[in-house]
Image 1 (cartoon, rainbow, N blue to C red):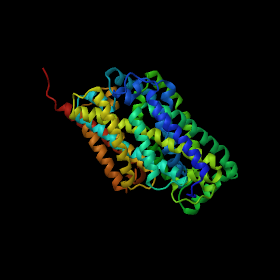
Image 2 (image 1 turned 45 degrees about the horizontal axis):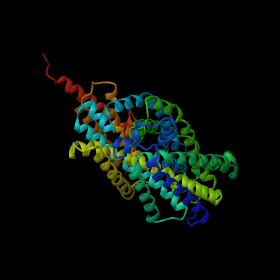
Image 3 (image 1 turned 90 degrees about the vertical axis):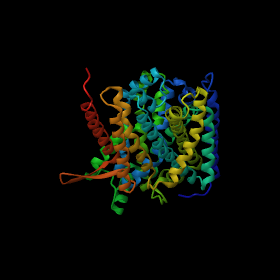
Image 4 (image 1 turned 30 degrees about the vertical axis):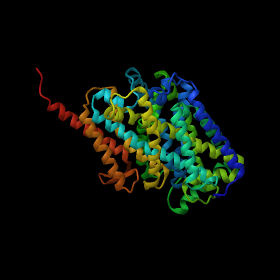
Length: 491
């Protein structure tokens, strides 16, 4: 992949980047409320987004630069194993259909803005609330970093290397998120999703014809995997459990993140959420097509410095400059939309579940909104630190690491929607074991999200997040039984 500046590609990129920047600032006047100095308006868009806005918003922050860059990169390196992201986005929507309307109704009826609010309302425990909120903020850092990794790949293909281009994009994102709140990424998501669809459809329709058809694409990928002695276009027998556990764990974690919950809480009703659970699988088709670009990278004979370059290199090599610029703009915008929502979701958590809970319980509505705005800026800085200091080989590992952490909030957030059996101390102990036990297993495996398990003489690899969640739930149940057994009888 060349890194020289192409004036045509760069001009097209700048045009679309400026377009969405203008839209970001205009968004403050779109569906304008009486005031944005309220966290419901700044952080949740007034809880008024209908089916189509929610569809684009949730799709915009769920299918991100991770989708465009990291999934094809993983498929390029390991083959069929990288397709685990496809079944996980199928598994997640029944969960959304059944659970999220219940959660939305609880939040709407009681004025909750974050997962921490819901947990505190259910259990009355500041400790459990803080654990859930802190986990959400920490898990969001690597996810935002993932978007910046995707943007860096697009900028690199344009010949824009170094820290200055990324810093400029970062500053623009920070300013319009600060001014318009959730309305900015909601409006930009319309343009972003349309651009991504155009890019992917063009890629899967035209690239194979330039590479001798899909038969040659698969044959070239198989030959490349055989030559290096790893990877395959079909799953190996030792990959089934890892593949299935990654899919299940990722599905359970997906809507525990602050940004996806923000999209849910911003919806206008439970019916809107159910409609989106039916409509969003259209993005799963998009994801499967995107993953195929990893195989196409082998058929094109690309010479890459990093697997993350496979998608930019394909467009740079096989398409005219103007369309390459359009594709790189789509990738960059695909990073801005989710990064904005993620920073807002994390800022809402800090404001409601730390600042208001511990620092200034009497903070006004306007004060809450101001704290959230400032925090959203700080969160983005934290994401940059994640890029600099976390030792990961693939951008995908960043998201999976965050997934291990956020998955540990599921028992506290979801169980309380259906049963009052669990007590806060038991859930807090379970969270502690899952969070820190999962982190240790990832560290012990060299910062990889998979762990080798031996059972009855058989060894298999399992997603660490799922192991940590199982330990979390088991410990919570045991502690809860002990608490109930030890409770003195009442007259």
